[in-house]
Image 1 (cartoon, rainbow, N blue to C red):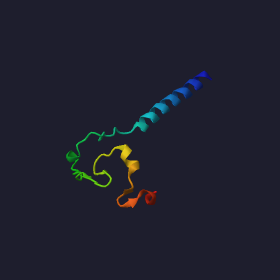
Image 2 (cartoon, one colour):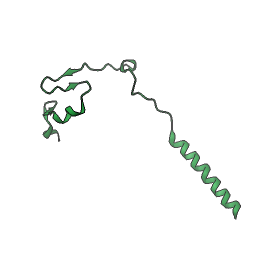
Image 3 (cartoon, rainbow, N blue to C red):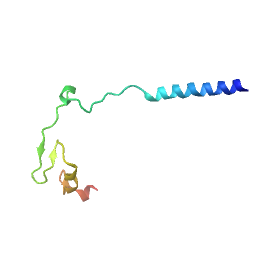
Image 4 (cartoon, helix red, strand yellow):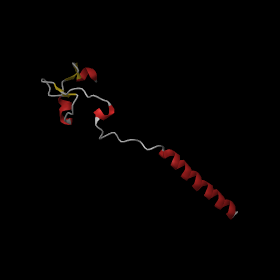
Length: 80
């Protein structure tokens, strides 16, 4: 009886270990700090919208977003 219990536990441990190894999968590349030009990607030029101060193709402050009256010529209310 104990031998069966030990064998069952051993099988569960091995199966759990093998399953965990399969879930990990291949290592993914981290592209968060890669220069876009090194990947053959040419970023668009940054243009500032004079009316709103929004940077098209650039980084905008989070606080600017709720203050925008429109995006791409469409009102926020219409977009929602």
